[in-house]
Length: 154
Image 1 (tube, rainbow, N blue to C red):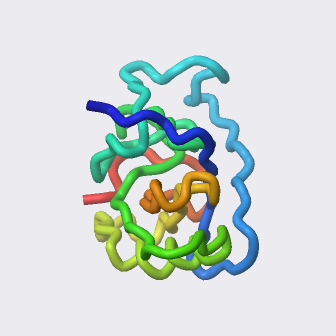
Image 2 (image 1 turned 90 degrees about the vertical axis):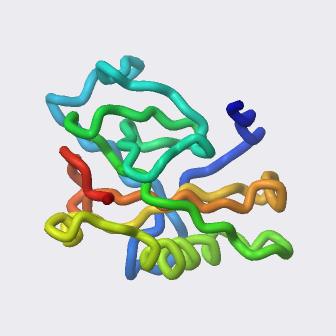
């Protein structure tokens, strides 16, 4: 059974090795990407709680609703794993960003030949979703801001 979307959610992008306030990467234009409002052939919408390691995502989500696409099509990210943030008061986006870099990175199981192509981004909860939603969704994204084709997560 699918879980309901939280009332609010945010995509925080945590670049490995970057500090500061999270930001959303600008969209990357590609002729292989369908026009806005349309889905890739074979695309399916899910809540992030339904993701499985290796699910390819396009476009980059702006909340916890994601579109899973076939990995052989150009895509923005690939889901790797989750990390459950510690209990306590809401730690803030900067701390959650740091947790994505520190806790997701070692959990990522990359295809060895593709490891240098990607970095880690995280889908994190807003304060209004805390403490009910403490999961950080760890995504592999291209380091160059481009598109991925094929699997990068084992």
